[in-house]
Length: 259
Image 1: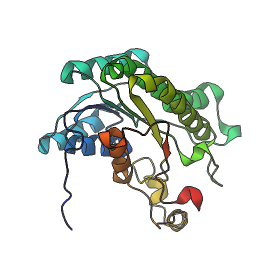
Image 2: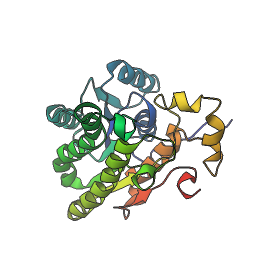
Image 3: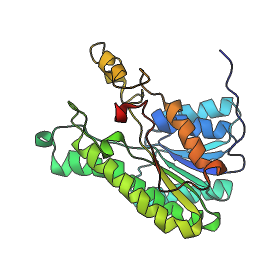
Image 4: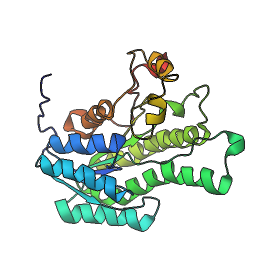
């Protein structure tokens, strides 16, 4: 296999990446750093964050992290942005990859715990990160990348994703409004809507021999996505190559949403 090459597409830029300990957040953090960005990450799981930092250190990449950090707490989010500015002098990119959601049927959801916690874990943390980064992004402009989902527009039969549908629909709509508010300040806001991506959180589905054939068949390309598939789309949106792209949604899903 030919080794991957990197072209320093983010050289000199500072990127906040949330949820660097696993999955899409980890994939974005490492790719952005390999492409020349100064990455300042965070994760609620300190052990997982340290493991990602160790990979970065071994490759000689520029990456720091604030962990453990709870992005549902306003003070933690404000401190994350302050520490990134102290470390690297500013903020150019925000990637809101961190998320938590309970997948339960409507009758099983508890309003005070699973419902409210999931709203905070997929919607509040996106709002807070964008809001606390906003004053820094206004200085020179920048790019915010939020994650919606195919579930923002459609339901998947057999999936108890009620809260997920609600939060991702809200992230999609909120991002369009943010793009309008950010336009005069050269702040671009876009969303990526991933299909099923093989991460630690989805391994129980991906590795199930009875479910795997259905999941593969659900995608036109015939396979489940990887964090790198999403990270490369995020790289484009973070780079100057997408300077005229805002309020857009990118369905990176192997064709599943059209199948």
